[in-house]
Figure 1 (spheres, one colour):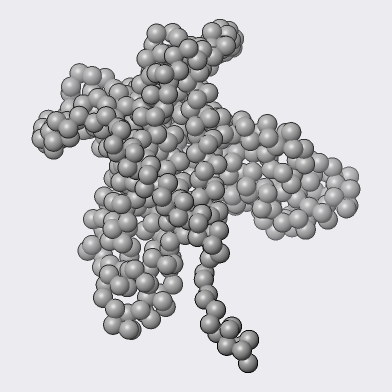
Figure 2 (cartoon, each protein chain N blue to C red):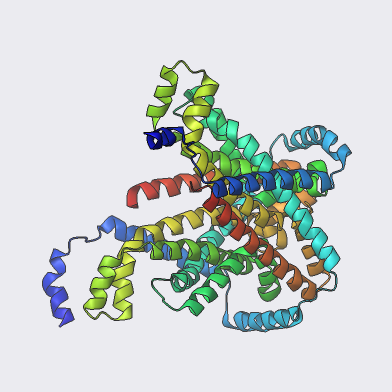
Length: 269
Length: 266
């Protein structure tokens, strides 16, 4: 009788004390990080109060937009940007898929190789596109080739990480069946893993192409080709009406790329 | 044997590609060949590039950590920018995503907000950073502005999608008790999306950390400025030291992000 009474008196909690503690620690860390950052960052207050006026001035200079600049200065650069995006996606896939496969623990049961592949994935992703572009401009000289290599190398990490996760999520059934039938490693990949990761592969390819269209628009800032070069020179010459034209072009292209990707995804995945 | 099998069963292949699909593949292939031809990649250029690359990497080694104070200062500024921008991004995205969710708001409200979010997302943070640098001058403020815009674009979209995928039953139940709009949000929507929001926010903080090391190249504060300056002075050994520091910082960020997600995974 008293046991039942005690049971009803018991206090029920959703989380264990340790879980609650961990949450509080994280909340505290977030608040502390924001407060410390806000206090120690160097911001010149005059710049902040001046900002709305400066923005208004800048947008005023952008108007009217230099539409006539498109045929002579933007179109060729735009096509170069799209070429860079497409090629770098293909090269990125060609390099990222094998490394991603190597990083998957179930497909390649060698921990040393897994860690090596994982390190490559993190390292290539941590070095941003612009830094890769600086490197490849030094290697190949300015131009679209440097830009293509830069985005392709930066894409390795993204593609490889998502692909290795897809491989690790693959069902064991068909793979064990193939192994039991004495399949060679190549047919194991081709008939065991590939059919299972194929949708993810196409999703990654499309998603990365969409990102690469955006990325390839900035490469020109360090001389690696594309529409960024036109943007950079227009900004340096304070031709704000041309800057507006280029920004509108980038916006339209990015929106079209997103629509294309959504449509293709609907059809094939 | 295999040739025989193919000719015998070729007609009965269940997933035969239609001619439209083949044409699309052919068009894609032709386009890629054309695009590759515009790169002007030739064998001598490739060999020369390999030489340049080897020279470049030779000058990067060994990494030079002598100016570690400058390095730490830049890293700290990048980190601070990323934290503030993520915070502002989350704070701004929360109301925007509620306004942009089609299951909570009428179309007249969702369309402008969705357009705003798309506008934020369509420009690369570096391009936004250039504009901010022109408007508010060099320094961390421009970087924070650019990263905040990027965060709103990204988080706004993901938050909105998360809200649109919730179950409406709970909302109806909360509404049936006579709850106000804010109460519906707090007790009907937030519990369903909380975990995903935390995951997205952690991911975005990670992404901001990466981008904060980059916007400095156009003068928007952080380690990127230090790196670009070292690059232009051909101090490649210092560049390599900075790169190592960035990679370590981002690896730590990724580990922390995974830990935070694990804690909140109920």
